[in-house]
Amino acid sequence: MEKIITIAREYGSAGRIIAKKVSEKLGIQYYDNEIIDMAAKELGYDIETIRKNAEIKTSSFMYSLATTTNSLPLYDQVFITQSKVIRHLAQKGSCIIVNGVADYVLEDYDHVLKVFIHAPIESRMKRVQEEYKEEHRDYKKYVLSRDKRRSTYYNYYTTNKWGQIKNFDLTMNSDLGIDEVVNTIVEMYRKESF
Image 1 (cartoon, one colour):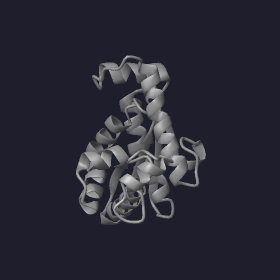
Image 2 (cartoon, rainbow, N blue to C red; image 1 turned 90 degrees about the horizontal axis):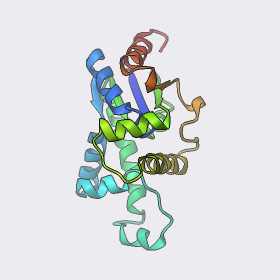
Image 3 (cartoon, rainbow, N blue to C red; image 1 turned 180 degrees about the horizontal axis):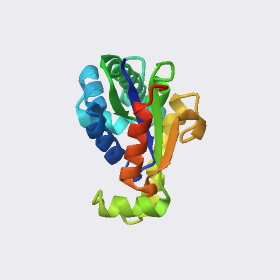
Image 4 (cartoon, one colour; image 1 turned 30 degrees about the vertical axis):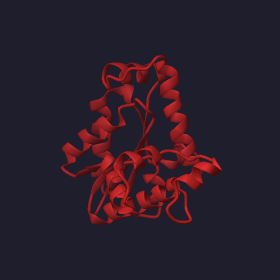
């Protein structure tokens, strides 16, 4: 039986790090940026163009006209293609999918553990600066802007609200400790009831 873990996260909460560690402990495939790469290949665009459109939704009419190859704007094409890729990966076998809308895309699938990782803003700012080695003039503003972008994208393309507890089976504060969060996800994954 295939079991899937979807991980959504606040920016700087270590969701990607946690997903990689869970993948190693469980010995199952982990997908993150590969989803964007697969979408780019299917759409026939370079990866950077798709990455720029993977978490945005704009109402700019001119942007829509400038970036469309058929009747849909590029960002809509990206969402549709990423959704197809996510469903394909879920059907291939047990895996972890780090993607902001994967919980929604797979909501009708059985055996999906939907996880949301969060942390206090101070911890996230520190992680972005010290662990991610990113340089920004105002770390708080940058982190919050990344969350806002994820929220806008999620809220536009789904019928749910980004980060809302009821959308997930498990929400965890990464300040509890990365290893503790990893172990909790692994334990939940191994339960027969899931």
